[in-house]
Length: 173
Image (cartoon, rainbow, N blue to C red):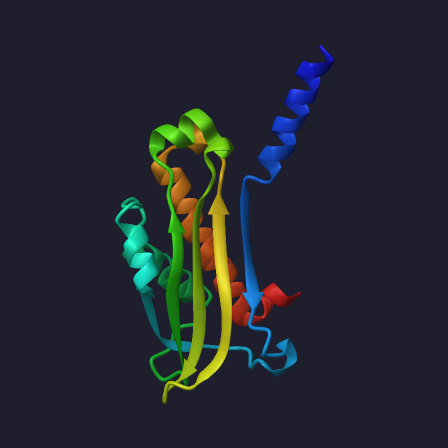
């Protein structure tokens, strides 16, 4: 009975760590020196060569859906303006998507779905004003959390949320 309770307690504890997201700021840039972005004029999402290779094994990941989720999030926060001085480049560096079977049958034990990217805020001349790494991962599974749409939608939305929060300074609080 003690073993069963221990297993249940471990499963509950591990499920709390199933989803994660975060931002890693460029160490060469001090947070106080980074200008807070009020608006951007353009958004560009692209994959590095290594990420393009990973895409072949992670075909459920859709960079266009990530871009549209980011665009929607920026629009919702009123951060898009054609005459803004800054533009946003999101360079996807790493992706991993579990198969539907693995996510449902093995859940977090099959690893996590994840996306990581370098985010560059540039002025109109291309000079980098701010740089940080944004990431999100989703490791839950089972019948409810293992469905492709639930996992991928959460991953795209969480990535967009932490990225936009970092841009606006909400992520530094």
